[in-house]
Amino acid sequence: EPILQFKVMDYIMEKSNLICKKNHCKLEMSVTTNGYLLNKEMLLKMKRYNLQALQITIDGNKKDHDKKRILKNGQGTYDRIRDNMIEALIQGIQLVLRINFSDKQELYDVDIMYEIPTEYRELVTVNFCNVFQNEKKISMYELYKRAIDMGYRYNQRKNRYVSCDAARKNSLYIDANGKILICSNTCNNEPPIGVIEANGKVKCIHKEKIYKMKTITAIDNKRCRECIKLPFCVGSCAYWRMNNNNQCIEVANDGMSLEERALLDYYYDCSIKNKFRNI
Image 1 (tube, rainbow, N blue to C red):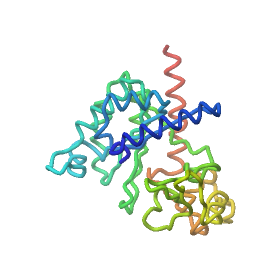
Image 2 (cartoon, helix red, strand yellow):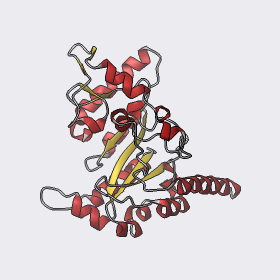
Image 3 (tube, rainbow, N blue to C red):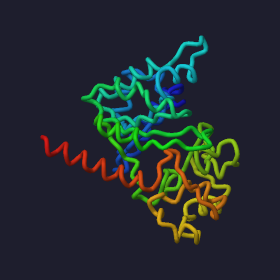
């Protein structure tokens, strides 16, 4: 949770901003947080350093969230996280709202979608996901349609070939201890591929892994090349493909079929056109 070390974040943001100004670069920043410790002062500081978006996660509806994400004293965290999200929106900060579901019943009662004021919903991109424990993925198709109708943004379009930041050409994942990892999901099962030394220099230990991660694609798999879902599926997780490029991940964590994904693209485009037509 980055907000636990906000003083360190502030220091990094300030130094990065100075380096970017010196080299005529534009600093862009996004933060993934559970949202509980956010406050107005933090939001304004991050906004000053060109914060692009906050990603905050809610676990289903209020009742389920407060069962799963509790404080040491047993109290729930939903209300405070919701209020902090709304404060971020008031400050004009875009929000990626990720809502995790472990049960189909939760889909019919998503409190947060109704509690964000209508006037701020165009700043909110919704992202509905099955938790990884769900063996059978629940389709989020109807929920996405409802969100679009309610004025939320939809960006789960699969018209780009790189599915995550870790697989992008010039990206590195650096953990809190300065270790360079293949991606954020490998901290427990994969040795570091490098380290940031005390003098700030990057030391790569396994350059071959970096190269493989950046170059492996679904095109190397004959089954994928002949599949109608490529490139709409984005070729699945690059790290997963790096370790086994002979299988298909088939269903993404939103549980939607290719047909549902295509229909949602069309549905969202129509909603945008209708919005402008009514202005």
